[in-house]
Image (cartoon, rainbow, N blue to C red; front, side):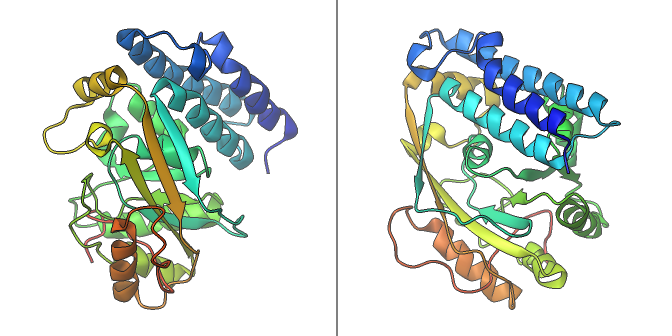
Length: 287
């Protein structure tokens, strides 16, 4: 459990970082697109530095409560810079134990949108760990890196996910499709559902939508900086996030298919939550 000084550091300095870093409230943001881009990158760097301070105070690691506070504070600070307004459909009950959060994947925006509502760490490709700034910031934010193409990738993912939920006590966010898409047309593979069943982990499904959808979606031949520039120049985006019922997985194949169909429905259209058993991971876990 985090000591009070670490959590207070995040709560006090994280809340004040907007002014210290020159990040104003959404209504006060100037219109310069390049200035916004610089402030977004600056926010990643500054929270990375705040995480480093937490680590130095706690023997080289960030306590769970402090990390959760850090992630939530960063998301709520960066979303106004991204011109993203989050609307949550329905409520999510506090979970008694860490869970696998699984849902559709449209954009890099999915990460701060989900973090603004629940403090989770994410599963990512191993190559992200080598990216300048983003790799270091991801490691400090608790991201679980796994190789997708190696023979031992599934075993590595199983160990990493189990360690995250059991030893670290952190919920983990997964995108079962393994890639971004507008339609989520590729059925989810059952690998992570098997992990959930074998480990007795809860699965918490979610689904995301954006308006306008193509502006927010990071798909096809999109590259990061040009896409980010267009996104910031175009104006406000509404993100809609909906959570299903948390549940245990009994049949991984059936759960993957049921949750995949549910995730493709438009948030707010209440055709019913997924049936018992949910989850997914995608191309990292192929079976």
